[in-house]
Structure formats: C-alpha cells, structure tokens
Length: 355
Ligand SMILES: *Cc1c(COP(=O)(O)O)cnc(C)c1O
Image (tube, rainbow, N blue to C red; front, side, top):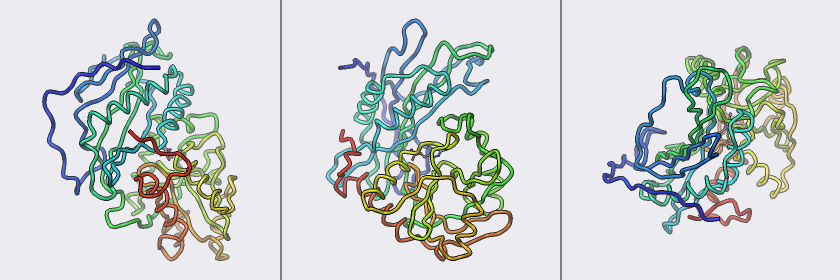
C-alpha cells in the first residue's frame, strides 16, 4: 500500500554540530514526522514538517497521567555511503505492544516505517560519518486530549524526531561500574515494565541519581517483590557468562523485551553457545563469583549495543568481574553486532533495512 505523506521542506537548514563532539540527544535534525489520531478518523494526516515546538493544551492528558510511549533506534551510514536501519520493524511492533498496555490505539506499522524512511531520506545529510557515530531516532506517542478526567485520551499524536549521536565509547568499548539496587524498584509483574513508557524512567531517576553519587554509572534492578532476582540495568537488558553458559533473565512480565537482547540471543544460538533464559538471583551471581565461575557480564541496548560490566556492588560488597576488563565474548558480540549494523559484516539474519 502506498501512503501519501505530505512533505513541507524547511526553508532554512540548521548548522550541524561537530561530529567529533556529539552530545546524546542535544541537537535535532531539520525535520520531524507527525501523525494525528482522533476517535472519528483513526490515525490520519501523516506529514513531515520543519522541526519545531508543538503546542498542547495545559490540560493535555500526557502531562497529568503520563499516557505516552516511545522507541529508540539508529540509522547508520556505511563506508560506501548507503544508509542502514537496524530492525525497524521490531521497534514498531514493540511500540504497538506498548500502546496496547497504555490504552493507546495501535498504529499502522507499515505507515510508521514509511514515514521514518522518508524522514531519514530528507535529513540524510545529518547522519554523521565519523567512525562509531549514528543518527538516533526517537518515535513516540503522546495523549493530547485536554481533559483532567482519568481515562484514555480521545486524541493522540505520534511523532518521530532524530538526533546525531557520537560513539558511545569514545576510547573504545570499556566496562562500567553497576550498583545493585535493593531498596527502590522499577516495576513489578502486572505493571508497565514491559512497555517502553516514560513513567518507568521517571521512577528510575532517584535510584540512578543516588548510584551516580556513589560513583556507579547505572543501577541493576532486582525484582519488586523479593528484591532478590535480577531484572535489568537502566535502559539495558543484562547477560552473565557463568561456567561457559550465557544466562539472562527470561521475559517474566516485568522486564523490557530488548531488540538488542533478542539479536544477541540469535547470534549466540548461531554460534552454538549454550544459553539459558531463566530466573537468576543476585546470591547465585555472588556465589558464582566466589567460586570463580562468573566469567563475564554485560548489558545490551540500542545506545551502547554491548556494555561490559566491570564491577557490581550489592549491599556494600563490590566484586570485580573478569579483572575489570572487557570479556572475550562481550567483545566478539560487540564487534559482530556493530559490524552488521554498519554494513561492514555480512547480515545473514536480514536485520538491516537499506534506505
Ligand atoms: C529500551 C530499553 C531496553 C533496551 O532495548 P533495545 O531494544 O535493545 O534498545 C532495555 N530496558 C529498558 C527498560 C528499555 O527501556
């Protein structure tokens, strides 16, 4: 099906930031995509317009009750000047799963991808070319109806904005220090942890701030009921290599179904590395560290791709993993996945979409 997306080109072009010193999410491209929703018309009026502020009534429901969802993905420029998107279909499928959980009407995934393709094409000279950089893409939905009644909104907007981002590791991949949070919780089964929604992040800021104050870069969340079982890290899923087997928490109804996580599981299966998706307690991990079988740990997410974990601190006991160095498997996964994303390595899984 062909969609008619109305395009209004910006008459001016912004100055682009220095590609060697990009700050995450600070600069935005010249255009944005918008789609409206009303009960009468469904999703309508897909359009690309100059990047600009949006006007909302102060009573818009998103401000009061947080009815909103978002996504995050990247576009890469290959060395031959082609543009690649990484598994965008997965992002829009997940956006719709988040929509269902947040009582937001689902949108046409094909239309969203078409809007994204056109937007990236129009702003393609914003994709930075310096090694390791990319164009970060942020699709999101907000509830726009002006009403303080606690009920699903009757109107919404879906938008896509884009921002050039730097190499996550300026000096090459390196391990981070993680604080295991035993008081605050992110979510519980039955809550909205499986949805990519703003409130999960609002709820995480306090713990993140306190962990930063103690010198840790991220928080590792434990389950909300027993404060015992591993869930995930900040905006990343988490993996451990114990005695040759890679283990990661199963999708238990409170963690986010990461696309990087899914890709890592598919890569590991193709390499015949033994993998277990199951419940893991923090005690089990500390025990494995004591008996010398905890070999590597890493987080996975769109921003960092793979983030090796060098230290874990749980209840004042800090342990160092793999001598604080990036593990062999973490490095291999990082090189392979970023190689596929950038079109440097073959893509046997058909993950990348050419523009
Ligand atoms: C986005 C996100 C992730 C990572 O998902 P990717 O699709 O791999 O980027 C993990 N956890 C949370 C809470 C997230 O919001």
